[in-house]
Length: 481
Figure 1: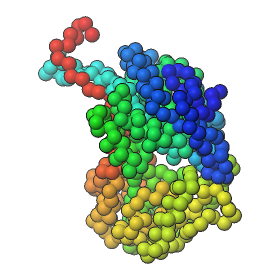
Figure 2: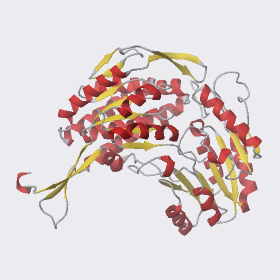
Figure 3: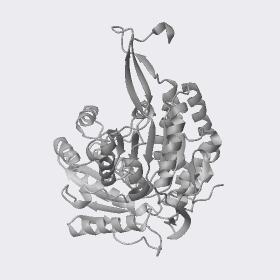
Figure 4: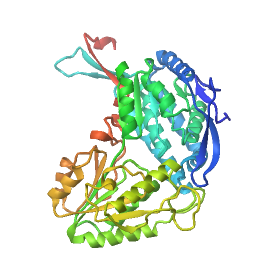
């Protein structure tokens, strides 16, 4: 077992060049659960050198070899599922049952979907019958710097690492320093699966340190980042001098449009979705837009759902939500709840302070505001906590206007039995994803947003393409291929 202070570089666990300790806090107890080291420039340089060297051979491995490798990663990942669940639950506060099912399960799901996508992915394709000697070649972009957040650790790590492995890229992963333990387990998994030395490297660090060093590094060919819009803007600026592509999956402020003819479970389903993972999901439906005819009833159902949503320790089994990840996150959420009250929104459930029975831990009361308008702070800023804002609307045109009146564009939701209305809204909502009537996206569907929610697409064939360069070749010799 490596020390929590070690980095994984060039197939080995190595001590950082100039150790700088950072305490990882268990958000349920506010106690230190691990101490890691934050890296420096020498560590980044070493990881980049290892990745660049490994790319010279790994880029030219066969698709079949890479498929076999990823299948082995999946086998080891499944075998280490309980270790992964315990790490995630401890570091970021996901209740242990949810960590086992949803958090670890997200990684399993993505690995399986990438295997399916890779099986059918053609790296060399004819341009068309009109140009028999032209080929389009997809090849790995090179060395990829990956920066992942704390809220869904293995969801984001697998969405980046697996397509990079699939397309022949090499990589350096910087997980969130707030929740790094799961990525230490992940590095062990890749090591056991036999990923060649230098193909995958991992360094702990913060955004201002290792994150900035990676995004500006001339030896890194592309950046894949998931996190806040603020950080995404800073990363884009920092990477500009090297002209490397930067793929961003950023924040959201999803609208959940509930029409009068929505199914009877639509409001409850939307509130539960908002509170899931303690509200710490970029695609959470945090703005519930409700048609006037059913508005009062919807407010009652949402408030009742919040009151029945129990809060508990991450280590305990059960269907409850855990704490938010940190003191900083707790304070931000409390400030925005106070802002909602100050600006005149009607508090119908939850509110300020910890839930009853808690005097420590970063626990937030599931909160519902009614009579919100789209100019209020709680309707415009991403809260990233279990806080739902309910906004009334009169008709389809007003609902669409409210939903699109945001700087974000990640996921919107529509609840109506009118199929034509669903289709119209799906076309007009300015977001990368639209989910309707509680139906989730299918395997291989792309995840990503518009506007300040980002610019890349993760998952399935779209995720593979994000890690490829496209090369046009003329004068190809088909008989010698």
